[in-house]
Amino acid sequence: MRKKPLVAILLAVILIGSLTSCILEISKGDPTEEPTTIAAVATFTSQPLPATSTPMPVPPTETPAPPSDTPAPSPTPAVTETPLPPTIRVTADILNARSEPNVDSEILTKLEQGTMLPVLGRNVAGDWVMISLSDGQEAWLAAEWVESTIPVQTLPVKEVLPPTPTPVPATATPTDEPTSEASPTPLPAPVLLSPSHEQTFGAAGPQELTWNWAGTLKSDQYFMVTIAYPHEGAIWHDVHWLKEKMFTPPDYLRDLITNDRRCQWNVAVMRQTGTGSDGAKVGEPVSGTSETRVFVWGN
Image (cartoon, rainbow, N blue to C red; front, side, top):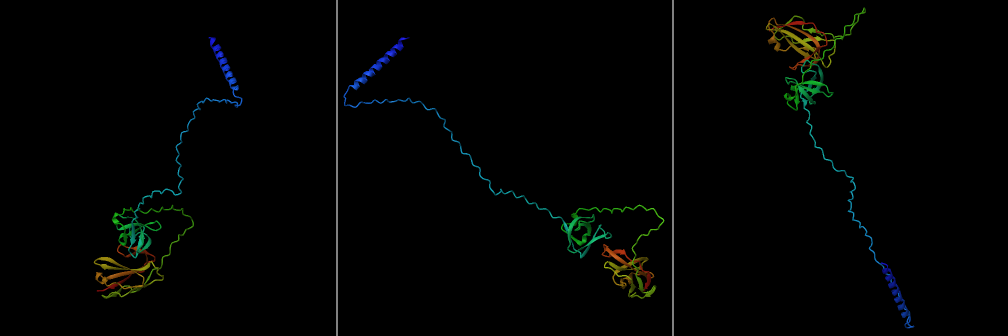
């Protein structure tokens, strides 16, 4: 095992000696020649470069579009038509709006021709309709004097409630001092002028019945003349509302009066509160009734 280093050393010595001899031989050559310079060439052992990682291309990201100032149109809602409520139109010149569906009830207001109001219903018979006034108050109108946008019989039936009874106040304990209650003073009664009591007329009858009155009639006040006459064993009445202080009995009475043909008549002042189903005025007295006189209408 020790022979190998010796051989290597020996070979190195031989190699060094050979090189020295070559150098010397060269130095003994032609003196004119310029010495040759042996340039040592350095050799480099190339070593592999370390591997570098190649970056993978990054896919481009999508740039978000800037928000638009114009908002997206919203869907238009569907338009639903609301049905119009039924209404009535007044056809009479002046029509009374009443608290109940009858001619004896209170008049709430008067409506002019052409007035249009919502209609709420009808009574069972269908001859009165319930309406709503401009202030929201409910009232009744005679159906024959209105036009409805729908048939009256198709309106709902409205129940007529009885009026709420007015509570009676407790009776006060009487005291020693008398108390007086103020009551309205009635207007004076008319005074009959002609004909005189028990006056007899021929077949033409009395031409005029006249009277006087100390007051002045207001726009809703009238003289009510009542003639009571016999007709086949019964007493019939002929009534007239007037603004004048005189009245001519109609000729048709001559044929209706029978028996003893004695007629009674008197006069009172009335305030009109409405109109009956037959178109006649109705109301309440505002004065006393005059005396009752008799005249005989001959035939």
